[in-house]
Amino acid sequence: SAVISQKPSRDICQRGTSLTIQCQVDSQVTMMFWYRQQPGQSLTLIATANQGSEATYESGFVIDKFPISRPNLTFSTLTVSNMSPEDSSIYLCSVTGLGAYNEQFFGPGTRLTVL
Amino acid sequence: AQRVTQPEKLLSVFKGAPVELKCNYSYSGSPELFWYVQYSRQRLQLLLRHISRESIKGFTADLNKGETSFHLKKPFAQEEDSAMYYCALLETNAGKSTFGDGTTLTVKP
Image (tube, rainbow over all chains, first blue to last red):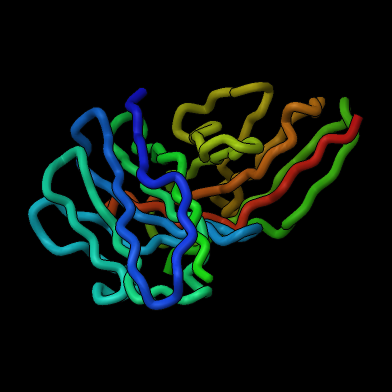
């Protein structure tokens, strides 16, 4: 199966700053997604990263807060802007199109702590 | 709107006992359902998918469209099964999945 990597693996940031998370896949994939996983809670889809066009955001998430780029079929970034402690979470990159049954593959996650 | 419900946040069984993790869904289309697992300090990964009707690590899950359920079962739980389990529904048109809240399974020795 493909390798999905994320950078950074973790970070501690100050309130009001921004952090950009990178997701790299070693194969071309059709669809890339960004999720948030808060401790002991489920995965919440933030947006679908579309190659060559603007990301599609889920209800409750906006581009100004979570700008996303997807310059090609193997790479995407998620920026968490103007951070507050409520943004402390694990951010996951996920892709489909690598398996036979539309299953999702996940990156290792980025653990973000905002002070 | 699509929805996935896992009613048990925590589930604890003894080694060798049967285990069933419940999952119910609501979806207007034809569902594609998956179970994902996250072991301690590992990334989330696919456990099994309904469409392939397989048994993975002794786990099976049958899609019951009448009851809109996709419960995960194993006849004899092992300590290494302790993990977080997520049920997921794929929206085939959009290509994205809706996840349940997850069930933390603990298998005690």
